[in-house]
Amino acid sequence: MRLDVLSIFPEYLAPLDLSLIGKARRDGLLDLRVHDLREFTHDRHRTVDDTPYGGGAGMVMKPQPWSEALDAVAAQADSRPVLIVPGPGGERFTQAIARELAQRPHLVFACGRYEGIDERVYDYAARDYDVRVLSLGDYVLNGGEVAVLAMVEAIARLLPGVIGNAESLVEESHEDGLLEYPVYTKPADWNGRQVPDVLLSGDHGRIATWRHQQRLERTAARRPDMYEAYRAEHPEA
Ligand code: ADE
Image (cartoon, rainbow, N blue to C red; front, side, top):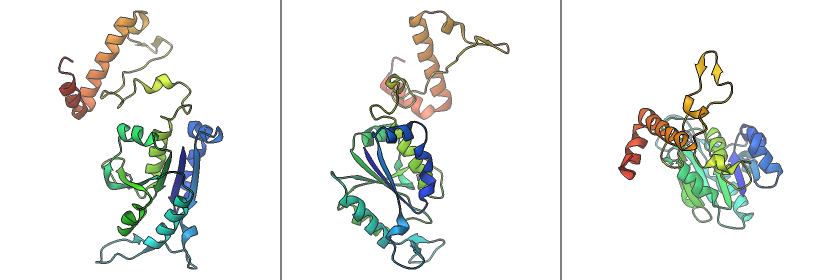
């Protein structure tokens, strides 16, 4: 998979060299390139922002550096890329969207800062890109970079070979509408706190039933919205 990230803070993306994502890059599974948006400015101050038309607080990202950066990346594309613009005004990023994006060969992330990117850039980009505005959740970050770290990790770990144990992808939270069951490791007695007996029983049927029950209880307690949706799909549960 080819990934490009456009940002005025390329150093923010340094963690993508670490852990499983870093290894996937070194193994050639991910071709991830980070670009400094200021490289596409032409003035002495490398200006990327200006005041908003109509007034109001803050600054808006100028269209010109974005159009040149997007043209440069599109010129290197073998297939039509997806342009992902993270922002609190976007569609909610979910596991289903991560799965959908993991099928695409080329993703480009545009990190906005300040009050956002001039709206005309979205329309301009639609010529060469499938454009998606995606939000991590109902809160506001200072820019798209932290959201890109989260999205790239969520997407890349779904690619074959990125996670050693592909089975660990199956029973995860958000894969089938329920949260995960609780997990324990040795020792069985830790400072007087016991691992549930059923997990020591060796009875795989009972263990599976217990885990499923735990998933239902957790989901009902922590995510009533997910629990209602699950009950609607599985009336017998
Ligand atoms: N940029 C600023 N806030 C954001 C959010 N909630 N999700 C994604 N990108 C953002």
